[in-house]
Image (cartoon, rainbow, N blue to C red; front, side, top):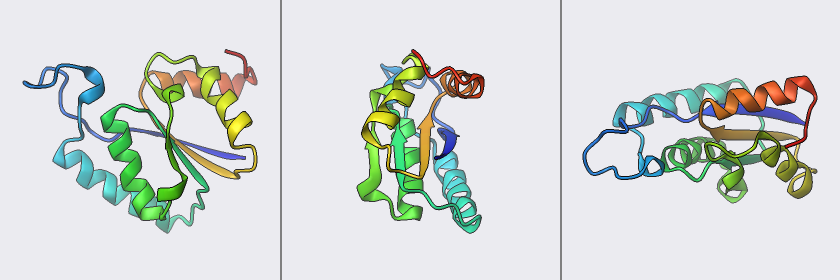
Length: 129
């Protein structure tokens, strides 16, 4: 399985008036524009994605939605709490192995520092929680 990891695009600042919860921070206009360009670049690299999993936070879902549109993955775009900040790294690994074992190329859209911790877990060969 090919696993691709993508941090969400630029989001509004956590102290933005009207944003009461970190999970509700949307992408900035600049973040959306840059993500569209990145998604087009990913497509030009001939990546073939069968599945896109995203954190439930708005900025990650918006990032994933841009990529899903470029790759025509709307039916294979799923939101999972396993990619929310603070979720145990092993949770997303277990979910992929249980629910999507037939997928060849999976893109995960989430947050730092959780994505770095996931990468470290994958590189260490430790798939436990």
